[in-house]
Amino acid sequence: MGMFDDDSYNEGINVGRRIAIGSVVASVAVLGILGITVLMNSNNSSHNNKNSNPYAAASEESTEETAEYEKDKETRTSDELSFWNMYDKEEPEPALVVSENKEKKEKKISAPSKNAVSKNKAGISSNDASVSANKFNIKPLGEKPEYVSVNAIIPKSELIDESFKMEKGRLLYSQGGRSVSHFGIDVSKYNGTVSWNKVKQDGVEFALLRVGARGYSTGNIVLDENFSDNLKSCSQNGIDVGVYFFSQAINTYEAIEEANYCVAALGGKKIRYPVIFDSEKIMNDSYRTENLTSTELTNIFKAFADTVKAYGYTPMVAGTKEQLALHFDLESLSGYDVWLLDIGEKTEYPYRYTIRQYADDGKINGINGNVNYNICLISYADK
View 1 (cartoon, rainbow, N blue to C red):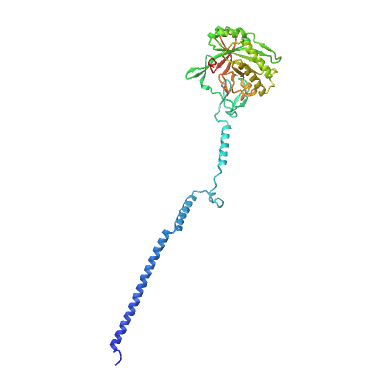
View 2 (cartoon, rainbow, N blue to C red):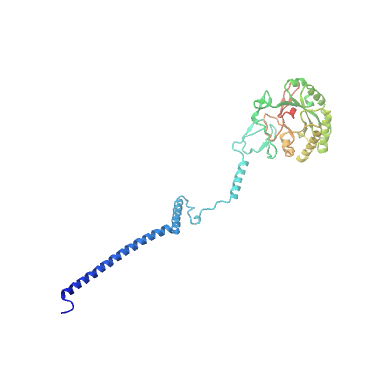
């Protein structure tokens, strides 16, 4: 007999087969489990890497910016989407912006207002759009208007047009419902002999008396023949007095001579109203001062003013709008009082003045014929 009998041999073969098949099945199962494990680990690793990787976060932000750009791009014009305009335009330099705004502002100031209204000396309105708000008419009533620029440096009048009113032909200025102005006249020998008591009763508070004049051709000084009587009678009737001299001085020496003449004529008498330098052009004739420059005439007035001031009097310069604007250097005279000779209820004169002659056809009891009306806007009695 051999080592194994037949039954034992067959049984061994079968057992071996089963073991081999089981091993294969087990290997396949193990491989399957390993595969699943590897796959799961790979997914987890990918997820963790996404959360922990900074480049991934940056990628998301970039995606959001791209989305915003795409959204913004929908609102852009075709020019903005062109190749050459694909980047946002640079903001203009601040200096350029300021310059542009300044230019617009200057144009706005210099341009005349659409609804601008200018008024002539008599208060008549003119809608002439060619006349800007920074100019005023220097010509008197009845003459062709002539406009000059307003000087921004010269102190402006602070008087309010609406506070002026005419009552019985006399101009008043009110504040708080009460008149604060003073009514006066100016008088020379051409008004004849005056009954000053009647003048006082007619409401005249002050009178500007002509002392005298220098001849506009000869240069000789003459005393107003009625000055002494007028001065004495005003004092007796309680009428405040100022005096004026019709000047034709062509240099400072003559101006001082005229000032001394006024002081001498007053004889040391104190007066409340100013001593006035009155230099006017002569109509339809040549005259001594017509070729003076504004600087020369201004210096002549200052010599007159300094002289009368040295004697304790208040100096004042007189003139029409034209005379003041064209023949004086008003920047140099801003510290002096002004007697404005401008007929009409309203005036376009933009600068400060304290007395204005506003009528040349007034009527006063005690004076024959017409007389000039004046309004004083300050109280010289308190000055």
